[in-house]
Amino acid sequence: MNTHIWRNNATCRTAPANAFRYTLDMTRLILRTLAAILVVVFITATAQEASDDTVLRPDLQPSTDLAPEEVVRIQLEALANNDDPYPDAGIELTFRFASPGNKQVTGPLERFIPLVKNPTYRDMIDHVAADYGRMRVNGDLAQQVVTLTTPDGRRVEYTFTLTRQRGGEFDGMWMTSGVAPTRQSSPTDVV
Image 1 (cartoon, rainbow, N blue to C red):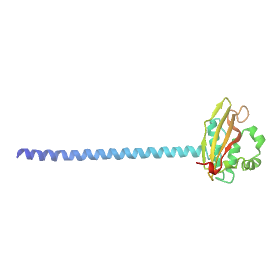
Image 2 (cartoon, helix red, strand yellow; image 1 turned 180 degrees about the vertical axis):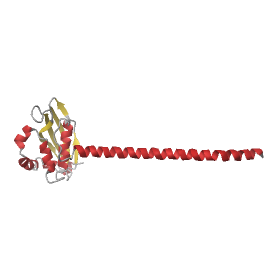
Image 3 (cartoon, rainbow, N blue to C red; image 1 turned 135 degrees about the vertical axis):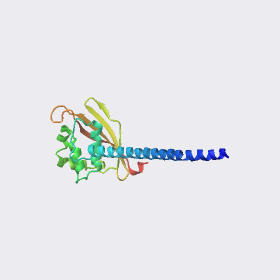
């Protein structure tokens, strides 16, 4: 009989300890889950903020801080959202990153806008996806092939040529010297 009482006393003594351990384990689990959620929210917010700051700012200007890949991405994301925040804002931003030599041939902006809207380049406007090829850099020259998907499902390919400027107000900045269409497909070619 004493053994039976002792067991009950031991059970009574361990029950609060087990309940405490369970509560502590649950608290740790909840804190870990909250920490994981906060990390995901932070990463998502940081990525969105970085994207917004780099790409779609209407006041964005060429800079020595921008790599050639960033210049191409800035121009294409601007063209994908061409009329945001106002009509042809994307084309205007794209023109801003054209090299001085390119602007001599394609500018001023009033001439550049219809040039981008012509059949050769109009597929760049409001494209729905962009696949960026590898950027090839050789000294002050860089080239990247980009495949765009148009709203009607066609895939078109353009080669961007950039040069790092030497001298003048754009010294050391990567700017687009030219864009050439490489390949176009019909909607039936799309997989």
